[in-house]
Image (tube, rainbow, N blue to C red; front, side):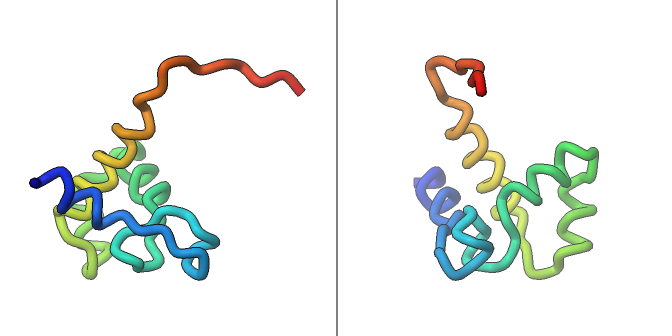
Length: 79
């Protein structure tokens, strides 16, 4: 399945980036890639700047974010 092969690119290892989700065990947090995309960088820009990443890695980050957004409710936390 395409879904499985994409989502398997996202890894969590406690000794890499403090256990944040990263791409293929590399030191690229998913969070960073999503921020680059949100800033307006194109896939081509990111792939040019980070030569060890692949198009499927960027798709995996978006899929990961989409899965995280599937929450039923969001509540405001009061301190």
